[in-house]
Length: 233
Image (tube, rainbow, N blue to C red; front, side, top):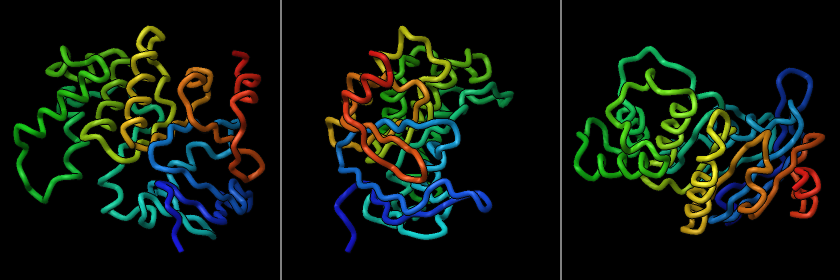
């Protein structure tokens, strides 16, 4: 019988070729949780998010997201995702607001035009990442950190029930990071589930509910004290 978590992994096995990344991995994350995922390089941090999105399929086990099998369209419309390195420079003549609007499109009916509410959601997401005054700028004219913030706004737009963020603070100046962290905490407090992959997890030390450590093919919790010792804070 399916669990009540926003994310449920049971006995998941996955690997590229003969080497397993996950071997019998289990995980349950309740709605309204803010979790950071840590682990050494190659432990499967980004792979975990791709499994939750249905971009990869496990060799064994089950994955359910928001009560549905991973990858199902009705679940994907309720997810905001920011992939790693998505803030790279672009040569497309596309505005910042158009990038963010792409996060609204999957939740609309086929060929349904954008309305005032849709653009209001876009503007709110831009304000949340401090790009409201740059909405009309071309993305390729922004700095790398500003482009990353535009991608984060695309993930945040429309208050998705589940946020999957892969290295969201990479390239973002430290002066802005507290504002981003406060926004993620606010989303979780409002009921969204937020799962963040980070190679720099000390950024999240003060705000997370859970720290998920990936090692030897398993997913386990470590305590805040262990987290404090690992990050040196």
